[in-house]
Length: 196
Image (tube, rainbow, N blue to C red; front, side):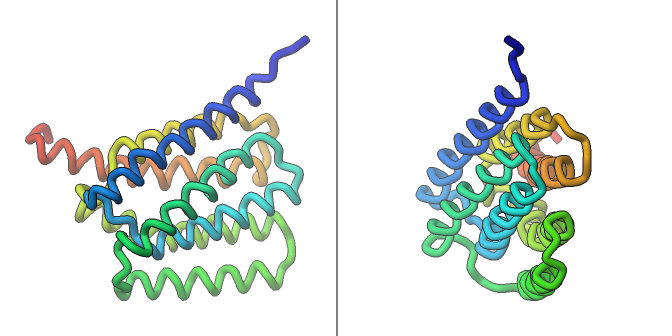
């Protein structure tokens, strides 16, 4: 009997992603973390679409990351409505508009792989408000939560057994986007401690 390490990495990826929600929600409730409603709403919807597109393309274990991200984002959205950053800046409005345009293009194509590509492009746009916020106000995010999510995204890449665009695109984008936010939050923590 051969052990499939992809299953182990998928389980661990989901575990890290889902564990990341605990410190994040604690931070929200303590009013130390202020999630951007635009980013988390967009991420939740896009992660759901990515999960469905990956299923339609026959992706197996890598879709655990998108499913876990979907769950996390919608939990944060529920809290963000009451405790989050809801003011819509020009950047938020542009991100929403471009996100809606990308989703409209996906609805026209009806191709799962095209949908996945458009999801990542839209996700890039929707991520901009939180990336900018984490750069300027790193204290408004939780380092532990973003670190756990980054580990989850890295483990999601290790679930890949078929190296084609449908399998690698979303997990690699997740690692890059989550890792970028974690880097800016870490940079802020180190600055506050006068280490950087």
